Image (cartoon, rainbow, N blue to C red; front, side, top):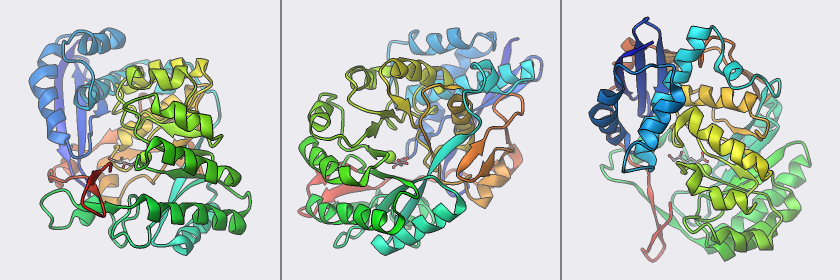
Length: 405
Ligand code: KDG
Ligand code: MG
């Protein structure tokens, strides 16, 4: 079944999404997500200029061969741009295969390992009380696991806390270049243990708690934080420190029993091989869009299973509902799935473009049984929200030194 056409769409219902549509000679088409937040048009160019011309005429059923052709077949391997392009094609081909078979993708991946997908939601507050009030609302809605983040007193902006802004476009406002945020490890250390102390006092064991350090700490600082948080029994501490040097995590691991998660920016198994093989982390957070699609993530998950590492896919709002659906099919069919990050199904504008029937109930998602991935993309609605350049923020220490964002 030959590929006859591949189109790339960029739409911006509050934030940019890059969507790929692969059409076959039979008329069946598939959809994939190629969004790299803040680098959207780089992926579009890579796809249109370098990938699409090589794929038209190939058999859409040969998913593994096409994946290897785009990965091993090129000299310039890996990296977020290349892997997002591969990912979108890969998702679209799984979507096509499912539609042709008349089966949801999870059936092609081995069927269900569980009935529904457990989620963790976000409570992001202006202060500890605000974070805990939001936590209470989420517990009442049935969420079983919640990520707690709170603004840091004395710092102007904090990761994850948007204040009265509804998304990063609004946070960026009229600033044409990346917004700058401040960072102080000392101020952060005053806040975080107190946040979890109060959370446990108020909620006991009514929910599991998580926290994202967003790579701001050095390895020894992460080790210290992990130790300080042990008594609060976190489900995991995310991105405790940068792991470009994967050995960093040996130091953290030797000091703390707080479970560790990372990997949302990783693109291939090579970025996390040592961390997994040396059992330095407990959860691997690779996203289908950024780690080579369903095929790429499946390779990483199967490898992780041997080392007792579970999956906890990235679920930030900059991943489109197509990526989220791909995660659902992976999560339901992957034995070593752990938990899925969830920040809602997108804003109202986005819901007019991406349509699906995934069901949220009691902090869990019930996967769609529609053939393929189960997401429809309204091309007409998408044209109403043209691409808008936007940047993620950068971080500086209080003396002006550039820091990890
Ligand atoms: O594009 C960057 C965001 O996806 C990231 O900052 C969100 O860390 C994140 C998370 O855990 O969702
Ligand atoms: Mg994160």
